Image 1 (cartoon, rainbow, N blue to C red):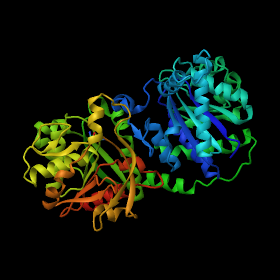
Image 2 (cartoon, rainbow, N blue to C red):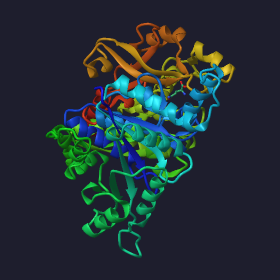
Image 3 (cartoon, rainbow, N blue to C red):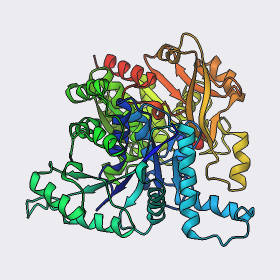
Image 4 (cartoon, rainbow, N blue to C red):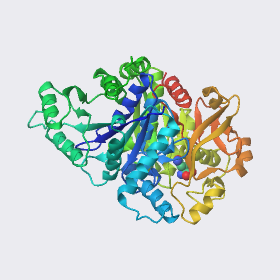
Length: 544
Ligand code: GLN
């Protein structure tokens, strides 16, 4: 494609109204019409990537195949589009400034005065053109973080404005705005959105579409009002009421024919859509009634359910994808590892109630003894167990302590002086920690893993060699591998180059598996992850 089209998605009124999902959904719709679409996320903060941010505050850190630690929206794009999104499709103010400053230090600006404008927006534009070259997409959807009228995202809006000035026929702007229905007034109010459009106008941008997010559908009088005061044709104001499941959004937006409307504005051929697979999936998501109860044992529990779901979004979505595929509905229970440390009775009651136990990724010492107790419970009661990253490492610790006779075995992340360091810091990581080089320095991104025959892992995956994504500093200590294997631990997947242990499992147990990688990052709405499918199958069997 020599003529890429850019669609900027900008938020109005407030954050958290589903910009990422709307962006992913529009990309999916355009893909369903036979075009190549990709999505870019721009985050206004100064962190160079999302890796240094606490997931409780900012949500999950999503990892791409090429090892970038990104915002959770990249995960939404992948889940909706069913394609890998690479590092070039993610930028933050910090990363943009860093490029400009290091270019200045190497005399890259040839003696010019380097200025916030135009050099920062020009760097944004340069990066977007790299996305276009790399992906060869017909449509590049660019989601700008924050909302219109904020100080922080202004340079990105400036970049968008400059692109529009240069290529007016190739750029569209979508404002995704919120229309409140105040309880006491009982009427949907358009004024905040009118202000959002004014804010955009003041930076030289006129939206081509307004997606009206609200509790309810937009009615005609309000459409007219928005149209009149925001200077957008009524047919380009798209109603987007709340839905039960985010996976309904592409279908709802297509009911408003947003795909064809976008194509028409670009003067492109409209085509029939094919969202049949998508409807089937979303139908199953809606109508599967059989419940499967999964307990997630973790530690990020002090800030309430809302942020919790955000911190583990890929795990939750992967559980949903696999469950729907098997015509059931996951019911997720958030179980607090820390309380299990003191209260075994509570642990037994809670864990007896679920069909499967999952320990997700994590860092540090807090709550780990509780997680180890939960893992022990899963092993002894033969309840399906799925450990992701830290959940795998702690399963090795549990096995070492209670089966291999290694009292006090631990990961050196928690006890650097343990007699049995079954999980140890990777050699390459030691130095980075020593010099404090922490950002973007873990073992990150996709690595190959060779599977052993006659194992749960091999049964789940169709291929013998798989590729999965990582984010960790510690690993299975290969010096202790032979002893642990002789005691019955099964190493079912290793990295073919480094021989690092990537998957462990247990025999004499219907489903007990731990992966050093994060399989949840590769589960897609239309392609559930094979390990999650096996896990849910095992849980359904257990429930019987
Ligand atoms: N804290 C562990 C490590 O760094 C596990 C990391 C994770 O679960 N992502 O190796």
